[in-house]
Image (cartoon, rainbow, N blue to C red; front, side, top):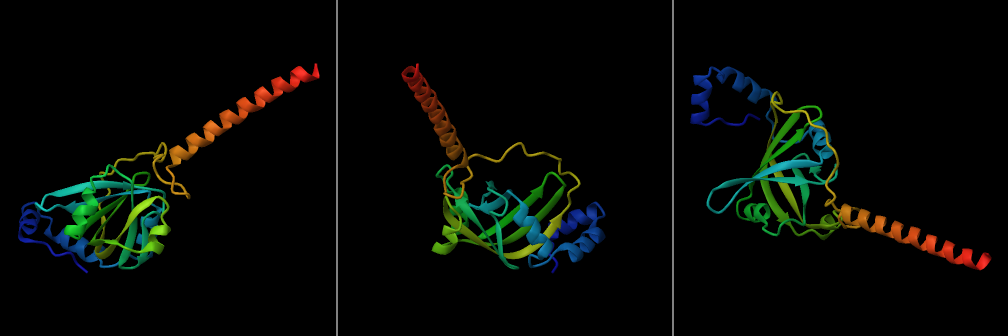
Length: 205
């Protein structure tokens, strides 16, 4: 499946003498479904970018992050991802509820690779799917219409230092909050053990 070019794109291809290359790439890499390699790549990512359009026709781009596998390929033409607690503006969710057309960009910075998807998104009322994402406020499904690999020549190599502590754990609690509670509990237990030891020491002298 080839992604159709419009007139202005063709003008630029002709101006810079890339029409033939553009047609070859289009025929070779564009498709209307997610294949096995695409699925493995998508589900290995812990972040992606999503572009939506608001009521004025103004495009915006948002970053979405989670644990690897938080974006799931349900079938070759459908994927889903959770909406976690954010700033409360609901720009992305509100936009796709009004205009379902979206663009998704997945990037691997450790081994430069990019994958683009176009499709129609919607918020779904599915209790079972929502329950499978602890801590999520809602779930978005995307009916995929176009999939194509993107040139990775200018993708800079980065190494992840750590994942966000705001990503929910299996109990739906922010991981940083859970870790802080565990550290506080450990300090309390250590202090309690010290006090018990001192008290017992007085009675055994």
